Length: 162
View 1 (tube, one colour):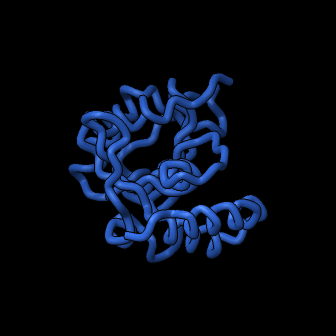
View 2: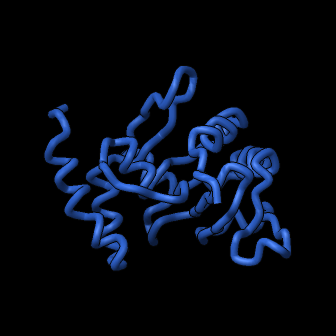
């Protein structure tokens, strides 16, 4: 499988005016953490207008559920209004579209804990703050999440003071 083109995915989401917060590994990398990740995790705002923007972007990305790609199943409005997880594959790589990362951790909860980063000229993206990414990985508690915590904590310690 070719490398995921995170920037292309973010550009298309942004071009459609989608409201979302980047979380997980890509969020940590954008804060400077030296980790490797294979997919883009985003928590999207679950309102009617934003769902339409997300669906338009997903069509441009040729997004379909990756569990059974041969079935060519695509998310719809009802799916994206839920707090559930949508594990998708696109022409630019995997995207995990998340209604929330835990109960009480939806878009509106994460937005105050996020920062706006300029990824490239004309592409500003909401990224969950590194301390909040650490908090979310501690709460998730999976082996994969626990394994990366020391690197994330060290990165947080090395960030310049604000």
